[in-house]
Image (cartoon, rainbow, N blue to C red; front, side, top):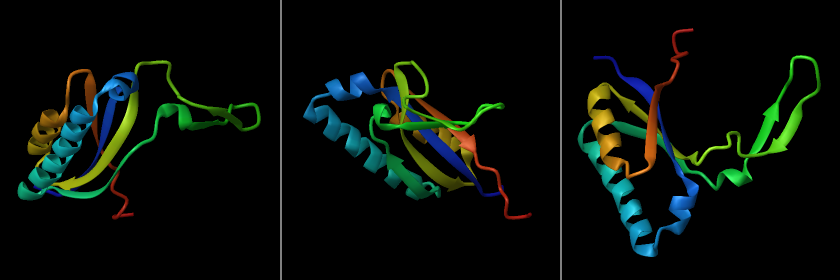
Length: 122
């Protein structure tokens, strides 16, 4: 099987996260440490990742077809779920990565796993 890169996008309700007590936040941090360790054990290589600040800190940049660039403050979507963090993972076993990401999710959280376009052959 060929190794590919996948972006794992972690979505959740920022209000739920803000309401978590310190014990649950520490447990979530531990879940991410375990995720990283299990990825390494199973041959997945995490090559990048970050927790993101609240969506209210985002800056949106748009270019309409017939006008100048528009810059506004975020978030992009009026929805409870926002992008909260990401991992960039190299793996040759997508099915196993899906299982590990699934184990990382809590109630009211969603993860999106998206392949990265490989431009190395260009």
